[in-house]
Image (cartoon, rainbow, N blue to C red; front, side):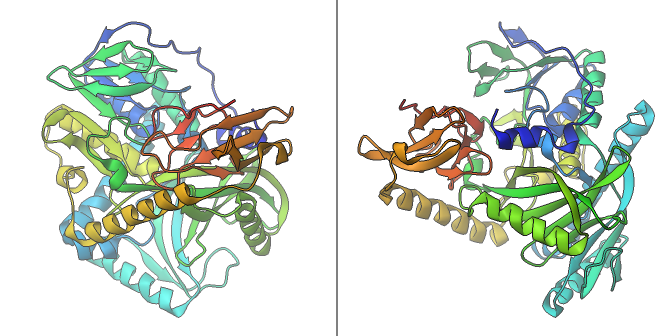
Length: 505
């Protein structure tokens, strides 16, 4: 295990984790009512809700349950998703903008009720959520967002000071939001799912769907799940008939968990200025560990990862003073063209295949909203949020503009990668160093592990052929076009790629 992955696994969201026996791997064809693919919050919650409806449900996880982004999340549960409501009013109107708020607000209430009803110990606490800025121009943006709150009957308040010692121009607070320990919550949800009759299959990689009235989910090793409904809740849809790779892009961001010299007053804070900074806390051993995040960039297009962590460290030290840095990790989030997740039937031709993706950085809330919506769709109940989140939507503004920008950027990196001629040789690398190199006269990716062994792979992404870049912070090969990520041995870490890289040594 490399040091960076160990740091992610040892972050506070993995502490005191209850242990379940290992779930079995799918070894033969099975028949169920619903196949749910993906063990994050949307997949687990969807599986639980449908099992409670009396349906037979199989939950498929490519790795080990809760061993992905969900385990590393900052775990906010909030309907305050940066500056969004004024923009939504402009693009989709007040009614749908209000629906966006209500869907996320109801998700927060659902989580809280589940915690209370089942006495789940997961550090749940109600916290005020702040957007803040440091310039007059940004203050006007906050004011317009506040006016949007008023139009939509969202409780909020403009303030001139924060509980934190950060000099600001203004801030917009949405009161009574929440945070929790996501892994502890979801492990209890898995337990409830199993008690409701559900089955979990780990190390079961779904790679395709054979469509029809009884679709078959095909797995990497051959066995299939024959069902009435498929729900794709994997981070990136494993079955991409909706061409989601053209309608989303991946962003990486970075997080430090620190002990501070100054006490943290509580609350959740997000700057709207660049560079974006986020602060909140999590209880840890009777203290408040402060979670400092930011430094977002498109996957595969960032500077040296160490620079991102250094910038966060300087900010945290300035605001609160650093006693010690306990943890650091990074996360990947998918951004949609219009900032609204894709939740619902993948296409009109396949109304029994559902997808839930594109949560930006708000996966705890919108992932839960997705589960509640998909539950209603499968049970054929009306839901006011169906049209808002439907994956088949395409808004003329801003979708066309962002579509052209996103895919223009893809074309740029596709061409640049093919023209690059690396100067380094594999023999140049030190232990635990990776780089694009020249190998047998061609572009390749090399990594020398802690024992001095070289791992050389073809750097052509197996998704659509873009050339990968080395991510030093996470020791992965990242695609600048669509966000796929691969291990040093070429195994898929993040989709949309399904096939591993070719190993050259």
